[in-house]
Image (cartoon, rainbow, N blue to C red; front, side, top):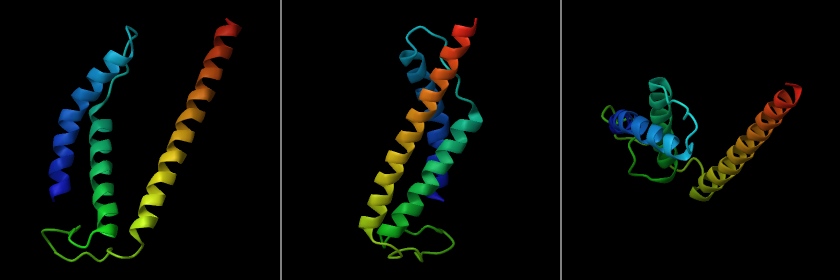
Length: 115
């Protein structure tokens, strides 16, 4: 329940903050637009995944509150495993981001050469 409230607040405020940051970082070029769907999806995925990961590590997290105070996920894996998975996921995400950027820049370069 709490994660849903946080997600709603993050989506509404985050859309405007990210849009401003993209405008500043674009350095005069037309900044890409952040849709409401992307803002809400990102906020909810972030909030719920945070609760899911915390419920693996902390016994006092109640992922199904207010329906239940139980945490059936606590202790399924060690805190060290959760941290390692997060770091590995970060590196995989970075590698994918760089690979997609490289492929798109090569594609754009080829289309400019063909003109």
